[in-house]
Structure formats: C-alpha cells, structure tokens
Length: 143
Image 1 (cartoon, one colour):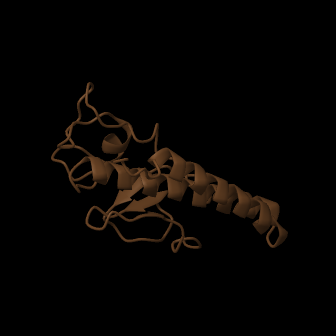
Image 2 (image 1 turned 135 degrees about the horizontal axis):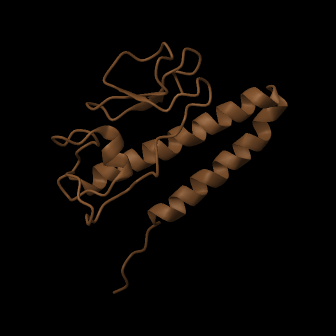
C-alpha cells in the first residue's frame, strides 16, 4: 500500500510567496508606488510572521510563542527552544525568524503584547490569547 503524499510546509510557503508576488505586480496600477511598496512589504511581513507563529504552535503542543514561563515573544521566535518552549541553544525547534521585522509605515520593530491595537506607538501588536499578529498603525490595523 502506498503512503499518501501531501504538501510540505516549504511547498505551501513557496505558493504563498508566488501569490504575493503576483498580487504585488497587479496592485501598483491603482496606488502610488511608494505606498504600494510599503503595503506589499507589510502584507508579506504579516504573512511570514503569522505562518511562523502557526508553525511554533504546531511544534509546541498548541502553545503560542511568548506564553512559556520566562520566555518573551521575541525570544521565542528568534531563538532555539525545546518542546516546552523553554530557551535551549541545542533545542530542536526554531529559530523561526532572524529578527522581528520593522513596520514600514512607522519604522518601528517593537511588539506590543496584549495591549490596545492601533495608535502606532509600536510596530506590531501580538495577542498571547488568540495568537493574532497585526500591524500597529492607525491606517493599517485591519491587515
């Protein structure tokens, strides 16, 4: 009996990136180029972060990054961890991203944890209860 084959995470990420690139080609016809470039980058950064948060959750028994005792969100995403989410230089999981990206609309790379979304005082907003990762800008909070 042959084992059923599915898509790997890398294949799915490649398709998402290709779709993002195709979308970035079509949208500039409707907006100024500078704003479009920022919007495209913001969407790409959000997609990458959301996919990596999902991967972290899968590999850590449905725990979200930043919920392990003594491990903040940024450390959980940029360093190696063990199955429980504790930092471990020889851990089997991570790092998921090299660094937190900078929000192109306010040039901030900070993440507000469980705060009020909007206002633009941070680059990003992350909820440890829902796992939602959003841009923290007045104009683009719904992306």
